Image 1 (tube, one colour):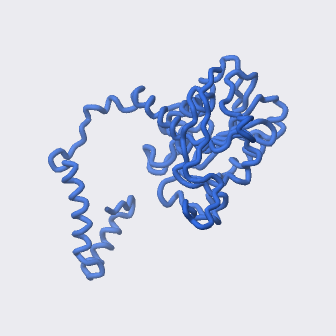
Image 2: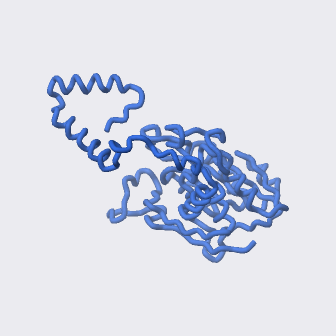
Image 3: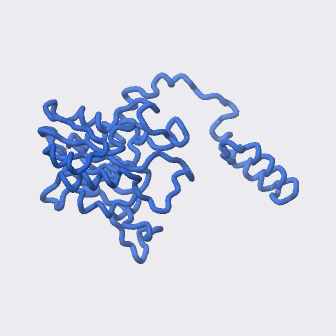
Length: 291
């Protein structure tokens, strides 16, 4: 199946030319068509070619959102939790005088959703769809007396002078799909790294990474007290707060190896020099709390 979005007339002309000039045999075209027709026959599309619209009113229902929120909770992977098991940072206390929420992805539904979300490449901002951003989820979860200060990219002086109990930093990749996401360095774009450094060198912090894949995090790991891989959690950011504050346990495990440096790639379980930052299947757990 060919998915050329814009220059499809050029593709058709080029393919027709190559078939007519016997560069591509007709048998190859027939093979491709047969595969597609086989799937359509199996799906019953020739008997019922139009979608059943009877359930469209249920799309985006509260029941659907609760299921999506559960999926977020179960897919988050806790990669680091304190310097030792005896002194974990998570779950975070809901009752605290003042906490900081920082990062380019803390108040951005589009970034939470990534690419292939209503639009092909996805969008930044909060106008793409409806849902709960992570900062709003945090505000919904903490004690009413806790002051939540949101500063997207604070400097060191701001962090140190405000006497925060702890900080939550949410950073990561911007949306992409297909080749637009190709990367040779797999780094988090600025100001993500700067935010991590400014905040986590000044106060106890948990960093939540929003990304479609493992990214470079080793250079900052020593300054980070707790680290969460949240992948692309989508619209239901409340699922992130559910586990950060101990209403639910962290249970997720890495579905692929997390590298130290891109020079190690490709790297897979069983390789002779398998030396990951976090191995395939890794994931710390927490206990539910009442706070």
